[in-house]
Image 1: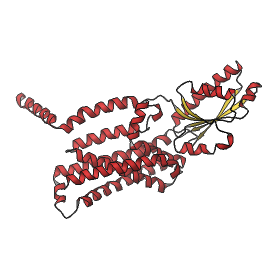
Image 2: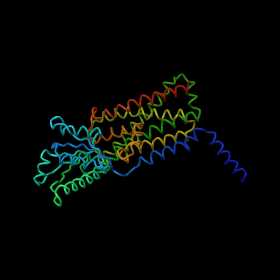
Image 3: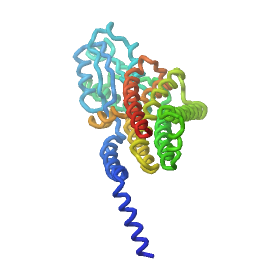
Image 4: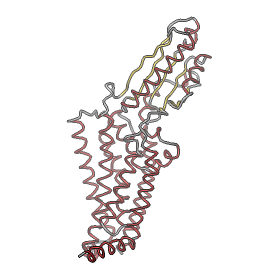
Length: 370
């Protein structure tokens, strides 16, 4: 009995060793996940994107700008151009396309009032869609304002701050999480269904039976992909209905634009699932690859941790994550009412990824079925 038991264990190890795909999944993929995600998951809130509207252009305003840049709490774009060339009306567009998370406005009498010892108020506008980053950013700014005011006027505090939260005045974290869950569900469902369903048919022998019918390889591919695309849209609808009716998530944008860009994103996820089905031979392998890909996408898309908090090299890695761009699109449409023009920086990468990935996977699939 013991000899048969040890023999079976030896046989399984030999089988795993001979399966090169399984060896890659067991050793290479987890190491890559550990190295990348170990740096990507960072709960600290730093490098908040800040726009500085300096309407004073004075010595004191420049000193205040240097105080903002002293740490790694904010990364900001300073408005050094004349007042008429850049208006606060552009701020909403920058919030919608994700270029800015906060904006600080220094009034044109900033230096004069400080010099005369009078009270002066600065304005801070924050994107409240990410409640955690907004709260922490307000705290950082209050500390900087307090220290700068104390340095200028000693124990007095002539400098005060008035702030406002856009899109999520109550700073409800569920408003930030639910749109991210919509993107996550769409990614996981479509990738896993596509990869495992095709591999399952190959394992059961039904794929070969389909190939001997008059159905062409292209028709077979489109039939399967269309089915999973419809299921993806059903998943989006269910998630949106629950989010809006149960969690009271605002939907201020265009539903037509959301579903249109979701269809564009589906081209990418279905292409990835199709590619996994061509490089694996068992459902187990396909499931492992789909799961590792989903974890990578979730943790490097800004779902839990803002991308700006990650090390610079990890931020470069996130460029190859299509879910990163779709996450901005979903949150932008649902909470901010973002339009096509504001979302174009995130649409272009999806067009490129979708075309390349789906085209390459379709060629591999067609080649294996002919």
